[in-house]
Each structure stands twice: as C-alpha cells, then as structure tokens.
Image (tube, rainbow, N blue to C red; front, side, top):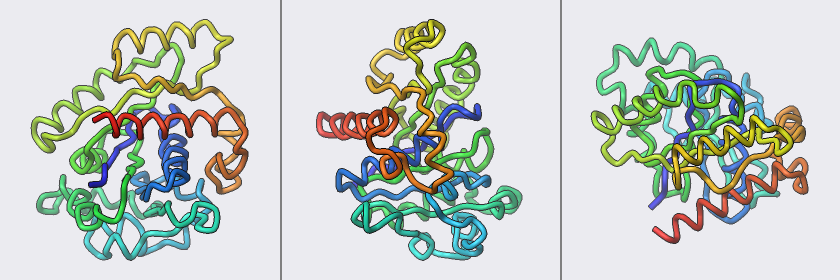
Length: 261
C-alpha cells in the first residue's frame, strides 16, 4: 500500500518544494516507486526537475483536477536513465491558477485530488504532493488526499509563526475531510550550526513537537539553491554535497519509520 505525503507550509521560502523534490528523488534512489505531484501554480517543482512548464499544457495537474485528463496520462519519467524509472512527476504551470475558481463550483471539490490519486495508488510506494504556499482550496485538496503531512520549518526567528494556524488547519481537515490524516514529521531546514538563533530555534521545535520532529536536519547549503537552475534534484547535481546527504538521510529515516510501524 502506497503512502501519500503532503509537504505543506503556508509560509514561503522554508524549503517546501526543495524538500518535495529532493526527498522524492532520494526515495527513488532506494528503488521506491515515487510520484511527485506539483500542486503549486508557480510550477517550481516542475521547472526544478528540468521539465519545460510551457510544454505541459493540457497534460498537467490542472487538467487532471478539472477532470479533463487522467493522472496516468500526465506523468513524466524523471531522469529514467539515472533513477531507473523509479521517479515520476505530474507537472504544473500557471494554468493551475484558474483551477481553484473552477473548483468552487464543482461537486465534492475538496476530494478531486483524492479521487485521482486513488486511481493510481497501487502503482507507487510514495506519492508526494508539493502544495501551494498558502491555505487555499488546492491545499485543502492536498490534505484531503494525503495520509501524512511533512512540515518544513526554517531555522529562523519567525519559524513557529503560522505553524499554530497550520496545525489547526490540519486538525480541521482530519475532523471534517480525512480522518486518517497524521503529521509524519516537522523537518528543520536551512540549519546553520554556527548560528545561535538556528540552534535556539531547533531546540524550541524539538521541545515543542518532540518525537514528531525528524532527527534529520537539512543544513543550509548553496548547492540546494543551485540545483533547480540545472533542472536536477541535488543528488544528481552534486551527490557529495551536505544537502544531498541530508535528504538521503531523511529518506532512510522515513523508510525506517515505515518498517517499525
């Protein structure tokens, strides 16, 4: 049985898309069949994996959600020669901007994504959803479709700002839309061991969320910022970098948790 994981944080710039892309690729390297669904109209996950956003008109997550195309017909193999065909992407572009307006008038609008994911779940071990950096109807669709939530938390002064609201949203989604929804973990990102504020925030997050905080920490690493401009996940751009190693460690931590449970 596959696991659908939504990577979510309504605060931008915290490493949400970076996590969705690099964790998906890292799990693919371990021979886990992985699908990444780009649910952000900016299409950063799509572009960051070397896919031309303008070339996927009518073959993207927008057309899937609106019922114009099957999800299976939109997926793209990501570096199949290097990832052995274990990673696929359902792309997004600016067409997704108008999808929410159409969804408002659609029956069971909160469950459109869940419905199409259920049609292909048995083809994958992991399905990741890169949600928008806002709490909108697309994010609600992601929460309704997911089994678990990963919350990237940037190691900065305002790290916990908005997390309380996100927790309430996840709790409300669990109560009203998806009773099986749980938090997989809070992920500390952009960590700098030389920075006292980073250390303080990390301690506060671990104190507040306890074992729900991943042991793995994503260090601040310039290669993580460079890799998307080359259209590659970091492990295919600079495998020896600390960022690539961090995400491989996170992938292994998730696998180990799965085996324990």
